[in-house]
Length: 84
Image 1 (tube, rainbow, N blue to C red):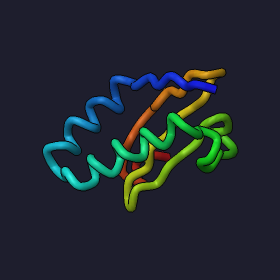
Image 2: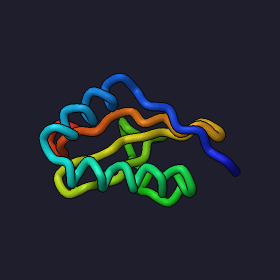
Image 3: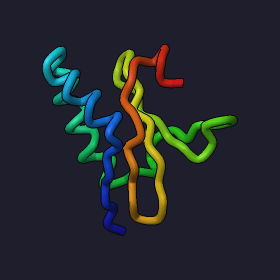
């Protein structure tokens, strides 16, 4: 199945800040997004209030996304303490 990826405005702002602040982490996230398109069900599903969402951890950062059919929506990228 081919997946389409959509980014929220919040995620795009976070990526712009991260690109200026930490280019290495920015590049890691870009590579992981390419893997995410191939197999979005691979990553950890969240529970309780965030049921239906999934997450990918990058050190102290967390990327939260959801799947709806063949659409993968990237919701946010934030520091672990602020993400949940």
